Length: 136
Image 1 (tube, one colour):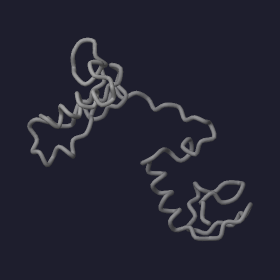
Image 2 (cartoon, rainbow, N blue to C red):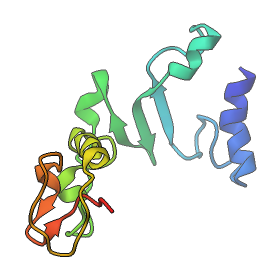
Image 3 (cartoon, rainbow, N blue to C red):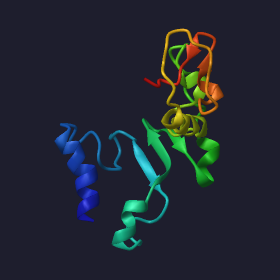
């Protein structure tokens, strides 16, 4: 109970927002997370494994999974347009994880404008301007 109090009310005091957030009461900011299990009934050692299945910011869902998946908002548009995230996905995506493995195995010398790619250089990292595998 003390850890939860420090995480909620204590965080609002620390950020100078005491009385504005940190408790579920009328007039306070409506940011909250619905956890995957009951914080008060799981064994203490399992508290670290709890995760959010629904997160509300300003009273609106910003993340939802499991039984709340239908409330999950669409992803934000990628900005700027030229961002590699538009083509390869963001942090944690399978394409990025696969690409990171390719980066670790691509060991050819990087020269400006070369167009020969070893088999270990992932195709999604190749561009018409040369190799984008960042091997140095």
